Image (tube, rainbow over all chains, first blue to last red; front, top):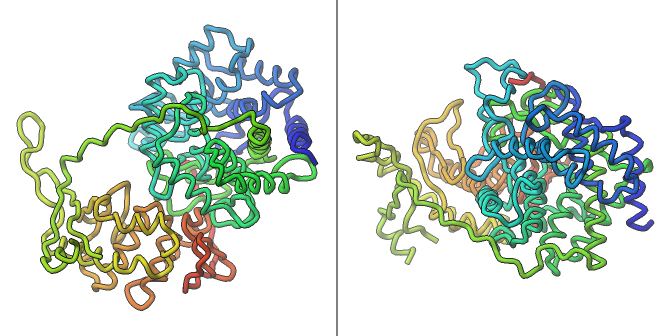
Length: 377
Length: 187
């Protein structure tokens, strides 16, 4: 089957599970998301879909569900947040469904979430504290700190002028979050390639090359974690997870290393092979909701798969995100194969990282054991 | 093999009228610093063996830990003996009170975290590299983390207990998954 046929089947499945003019998914204590999910899906498939009227209906749904004077939230009754607003703005790019005034308001709403280069999902006074019934003594520091995954999503919207100073500052901030295993952290996602894929997408959008150190660590991670059959798993699983594989494939495509052409093809093949009979890709527990006080999700001892509340994994029901991302990644791979997408293999300037200021409360101590210090020479 | 310097966290013990720090003190005593140096020397000597030889990124990171880690000596909650967060590794009095082999294994475990290793990575390499002394088996809390996060440097088959590095080397350990579960609200 041709790649375009795989994509057409995937899109067909998405239209099957559409609820008139929007998608829903990710059941949590706040219910299922409609605006955030619809924004994410439209942002990824609008350019691929032949169903222009369907996309227009979804865009009108999004335009109708924006908060007065602000952005979008997760779903009915949930206060506005930066991530939902970023995806809805991306879905409505160049759309007449959103008027110029509304677009300015939404952009300004997203902009006020920016703090030293990173974007906070929720502002402390957003109303999220009241929504989750947290008392004033309970910390919501986790949900109101800057998040790399949200920042990377927003960098792909018009909030950041192409190649502008704010974009460079946020890209620099993102680069500093990469750990020594190559992972760019995500607060809301279990998948180690989510922030990386959106960050590389942003580098392409802003016509900048990422620092070599970031590329080398990320490329090494993608090589280490690729399963024998070309796909990528979720957690300890050795089974192909479509959401993870699509994001890893997008990373490999943007990195555009000729030495990894085989890996890209293998990931694309693994993705095509895991498409279900109904045309969709199976969703898994890819989303995570740390409790609002949790600043570092790595320190959470155990995650629930049933509560949908704090410290829970949440399933991508109907595989809506997995299918949207699989279609997007396969189309991008096809564009690379046919020479329509060169990724980051272009003569763009490399983003320079500022030198970290020395920590005044750290001192360097010499080895007090002379015989051991001597062996160091 | 050995390390010439390490970086140690200090704390402010005297603050001036302007709000700045006028005097600092090391969080680690001289004997604790000596223990860290000794452990790092032993760890560096081990890096080329015990399953790490084909994991260049991890191996280089462990070797460079002397220049990238900030060591802090402090107490931690919940009977935790050591913790890695960002560039900092905190070692508790309990860790320093361990046997030499156990202390070295604790430091090694935290350095693997510092290098981007998950709990599975740290436990796997600790139990493989310090099987003859120093390692402790995974605790009940670890298994859910193994399943949820997997490894960045190892692959794990919970059914058979087999752990292999992402370079394809099988580690001499068996982590058979005993299974677990749980539930809660927003907070």
